[in-house]
Image (cartoon, one colour):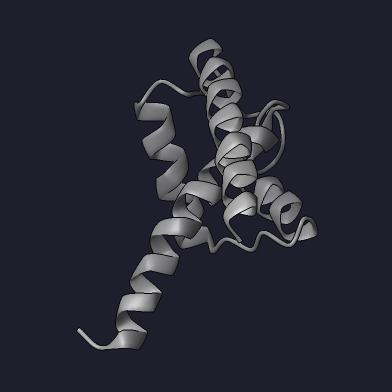
Length: 108
């Protein structure tokens, strides 16, 4: 594996965890997929729809998210929000992330 491919693979691994934290943190308030993409973009966390929607399904399967359909609008929308487990995991993961960031800053 060449150096650039290795770097891209490692960058993807790093981004995946950070993106998951960002999505979980934004789902403290109920949102649908497109509104979540917009909220992420406003915070300079650009995630492709092809990445976000599988992530949402995975997080829901893991029990971290709950979803419901809004059929009132002309176009049905699936809304996502944190489950109780999702809230607990977000708090715990944010604590781990903050500690790791603080520890890493001491090394650099």
